[in-house]
Each structure stands twice: as C-alpha cells, then as structure tokens.
Amino acid sequence: MDQQLVEGLYRDAIADADRLYLPKRDAFLTGLPNFRRFFVRDSLWFAQQILAMPKDNPIRQKYLGSVRSILVLIAQHQASTPNPISWEDVLEWPPHLWHRVMRDAEFGQMPHEIPRNKWDWLWLKMHFGIGFMRGHPYYGSIDATPLWLITVAEYVRQTDDTNLVDELEVQIGRAYRWIAKKLNEGDGLVRYRKRRAWNLKHHSHQGWRDGSGSGALNALGLGYPIALLDVQCIIYRALTDITTLGPRLGTRSARIESVQNIAETLRERIINDYWSTTKEAFVFALHEDGVQVPSVSIEQVFLIWCGVLKHDARAIKVRNALLDENQLWTDYGPRTWSIADPFFDAQSYHRGSGWPWLSWLAYEAIKQSGNSGIASRLREAALRGFIEVHGHEELFMVSEHGEVGRIKKSASPQLWSVGAALALAADELTKKQ
Image (cartoon, rainbow, N blue to C red):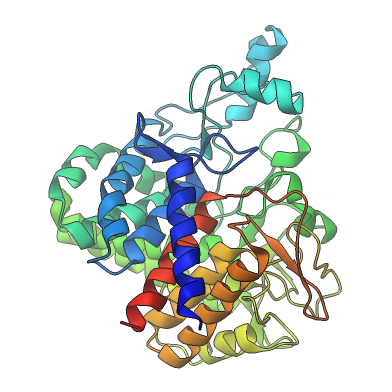
C-alpha cells in the first residue's frame, strides 16, 4: 500500500482526534456535527482502538491517560438506583416526565450517552426539536456495561494500573450484578425489549444498530425480546475478564470459579442457539421465544474477538464469510450486512453500509487469532476505504457493483472511525518500518 497515502491518513486522524478532544473532561465528543456528546459505546471502542496500537506509538502514549479518564467518567454515571416510573410521574410537568422516561436506568447499568453539561438538552431542542434529556444521562444500551468491564480489564492488563481497580471496585461489582440479573431474566441470554410503551421509536433498539438508523431491525419485523449475537459475545468476554480482575479485587477463588462456569454455559448457548445449519453461519439475533433471525452479518466477528470460537472449527466459516464477495467482502472493508440477504440495502444506515470501526474490529479479531495473511488483507481494505471516502466517516456506501460513496446522514469525523484509522494506519506503518 502507498506509504505516503497511509501517512496522510494517519496525520488526518490525529488532527480529527484533536478536534473531538475536550481537555476539561479529558474525553472525546462522539462526532460532528450532530453527536456533540459522550456516547459510551463509541468512547469505549475508541479506547479499545487506542489500546490496540503498538505500545511504543506516541499517539497511544498521548491518549492512554484519556482512556483511563473515559473509564472513570463512565463509572461516575453508573446507575446507582433503578428508575421506575410511577403514576405520580405521569401527572408531573411533561419535561420532567420525559427526562425520567428516557433515562431508562437499571441498577448497575452504564449509560448509553452522557451530556457534556446541563445545557445539552437545549442544543438538542434547537437542532432536532427534542429536549427530553434535560442534562441527564440516557441508559438505553444493552452492551455498554459489559463493554466497560472489558475495557477496564484490558487497560489494567496493559498498564498494571492497580489503583484503577481499587478506585472502581464498587462499580465493577455493580456491573457484574447487572449482567447476572440480565442473564437470569433472559433465561441464560441477555435480551432487551422496549422498556416503556411510550419510548420514542428511535430508542426501540439497544445494540449498536440503534438510533434513527435502526431500519435494519425494523425491516426484519423482529418481536421482543431480542437477543443479539454480538451482545452475547461481549457478555461472555466480560465474564471471562472479570475472572482476571477477581484476584486484584480480592475475590475468593470459589466466586471466580462460579463466574467461569457461567461464562462457559453462555459460550455453549451461543454456539448451539445461533448456529444455522441451513445458512452454515451464525445468525444475527434471536427474537421472541428464541427464534433465529436468518440473516448473516458482520456481528459474527465478535465470536472471534471475544474468544467464543477459540476451540471451534467454525471460526473458519466466519473468516470465509468476511472474504466472500457474495456475502460481506468489499475491497474497502467488509459490509455490515450480507449482500445475499433480501433486506440488503447498500445505502441504508444499517442494512449493508460499511462501518469503519467494524472493519477495524474484523481486522483485530483475525489478527488476534493468528492469521496474519487474512488480517493484512482486511487492514489494507479498510485503509483503502478511508482513502477512497476522503474522511473519517461514520459509515459509507459500497454498491453491489463496487462503487464507493458517502451516505448523507453520516457524521464526519466520528470518534470510533477516527480510532479505527489511527490503529489501522499505525499497524500498517509499523509493518513497513
């Protein structure tokens, strides 16, 4: 790959990271122009991307302290009480009702998004006509809590910062109890449903395919409760990572063994319940009473990144799907939805567009599995996508004929796309040294 182009991409990514950085919070805005807040999921994936960079990389060293600050900021907004809605709330002034409803918090849960300040709701009102948050965090995310645990464990593993474990001991315990509660409620899987009948339609889904672009899920006609494949994988890795934090927390060995057993039971459920013999692939989700959603998507890479398929030969089929032009592969990074699926739409927000952070995750998962040849191919394709689109777009289009283009509603720069560019370019430039 042309080194000058990669170096230019790397410099641009550094500049965009600086644009999104807020020194007073030592954290990053999610994206411009419309995501001028702290989205927890996006921030945590950006933290993972920084941690994945070569250890002697100066940008990694520059932002390593910010990774710690992000973890602490999120922990400070963990739900410490449930958020019930009573009939008295219904009789309250509507703005009070709406910020209570939209918080949707459960004890121990990490938020979906955190406002910059108490006036954030006014910015939302002026630009989008909605002001329901009134400066409060929103908690409608099914994956933020386990992803926070994974990132804490990874940060501690790389830095040996035992002080952080002491500082966050209470929050780690609450997060684990939230996971245990969700597994119990979901009969061994973590599921979500529309928590309130009056929730806004844009918040009817709680995985990464949420928001106003949740057409992928709406088009499929899914029934609640929904158990997403990627969420189960993240829960599994969070449970296994908790066991590595256990000795630092002074957790008894019997408790660690219990968590390990829960994780192994979940791993078996994932492999058995999500595998489709007709598709010869792992499906996107289960809905209603455990019915498979017969769609193949990029969520399969979570099986490898989270270690679910570490001893399973079907990991080869996941890799093959990534490289198959009739499913997910493009020369600019994998699609998020199989081109063979009847619901595929290259220009949609979630039904086939390319998301750079997932191109990075696919690369990172295959790299960690030890297949350097396929990993290099994925890295070069993802870098080609950034170069072709000329920016750190939230998402972009690759048509059925291989034509690349921007998607109108895409944020640019977007934080986890910037992080993906930094990590991918750093690895490419390190390889050529």
